[in-house]
Amino acid sequence: MDTDQVKSKQDVIRFIQELIIDFIENKDTWENIELSDYLESLQAWLEDADDAASDGNKWKLLCSALETPKFYE
Image (cartoon, rainbow, N blue to C red; front, side, top):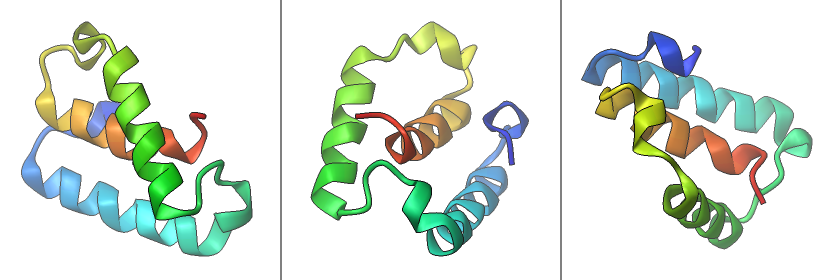
């Protein structure tokens, strides 16, 4: 699911389910596979993120934050 499609709590739940599946099936393509690395990357991205990128959609911002540590150092 693309973060642009996220509009509700149910969309976030579905997005997280898909993120889990992606991690299980494609773990070797993820930048941060250890929880501590994932959380550190999540924190760094949130510090750098521009809230305007979410278009005021907090659900989208949440999903972007959860997905980004997959590739953000």
